[in-house]
Structure formats: structure tokens, C-alpha cells
Image (cartoon, rainbow, N blue to C red; front, side, top):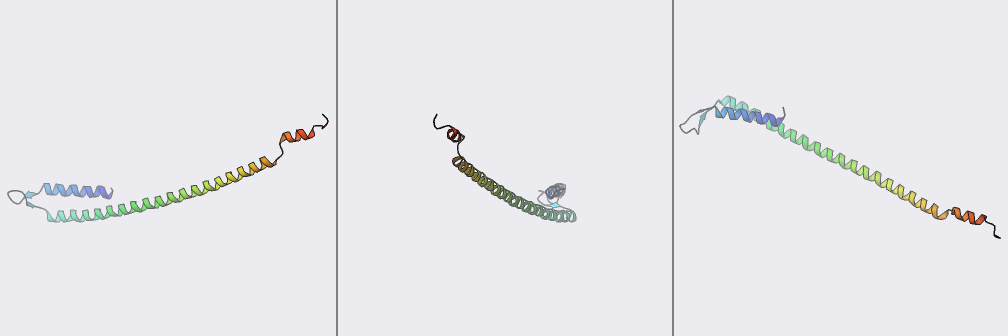
Length: 117
């Protein structure tokens, strides 16, 4: 049972205890209550609230850790993509240089043709 469920259960038990109590005065503003049981429920409620606070803290820490891990993964992806983009750019520059410095296949055909023709 989660701390929140436990807290809700204790509050329900307190409500039942209060609703089932006998009126002490004629208008019902004061009641006769089982003091021992109410103190037990208050102690349980105190523990349940502390447990809820611990669960919240663990959830907050988990979310922060997940956020940091996701940010690191994102940075790694960007770094990798940047490196690959640089590689693609370098390859395109090399290809362009080769394209402009290599002789054209047509150049070879022209040079083989006899000059007297």
C-alpha cells in the first residue's frame, strides 16, 4: 500500500471514529471520543505523512536524475551528429576537388584523335 493510500485509509478511520462518537452536549458540538484510539490514529497519520514526504523526495530525485541522464544522452547525440556532419562536409570537399582536378573522359578522347583528320 502506498503512503498516500495509507494516509487516506487513516483519515477514513478517523472520520468513522468521529462520526460514530456520542454527543456530549445538546447541540453536538462536543463529543465523547475514544482518546486512546484517536491518539493511535494520529500517530499512524504522522508516520504516513512522513512516508509520503519521503516518496515525494525520492520521486523528485529520480526525475532530476532522469533529466540529467537525458540531457547527457542529448549532448552525446549532438556531438556524434556534429562529427558525422563534419565528415560528410570533408568528403564532399574532397569529391569536389577530385571532380575539378581530374581529366574529363572527353579530354582523353580528343587527345587520341589524329590531328590531320
